[in-house]
Picture 1: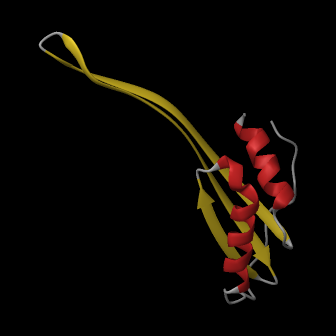
Picture 2: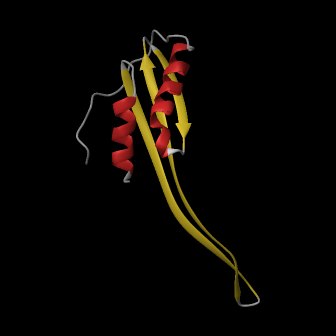
Length: 100
C-alpha cells in the first residue's frame, strides 16, 4: 500500500475537529562483508504512521507501525487529545489543499 493511501485511511478513521497525519515509509538494505564474503545481510521495510487529532483546542498524538490497526491509532490519538489541556492560542491547521 502506498503512503498516500495509508494517510487517507488514517484520516478517514480520525474523529475530531481537525486531524493531520504523517506517513514515513522506509525500505533499505545493508550487507557487511568479511573476508570477501557477504556477512549479516539485512533488509528493512517499515512504515510509521503518526496521527494528530485536534479536539476542542487540545491535541493528541499517537504513532504506530502496525498498518492493520489504524482504528486503534485514531482511538489512542483521540484519547490523548481528551486528556490534554486546551490551548486558547492555537491557530489551527492550514486549510486543506490538493496533493501535488
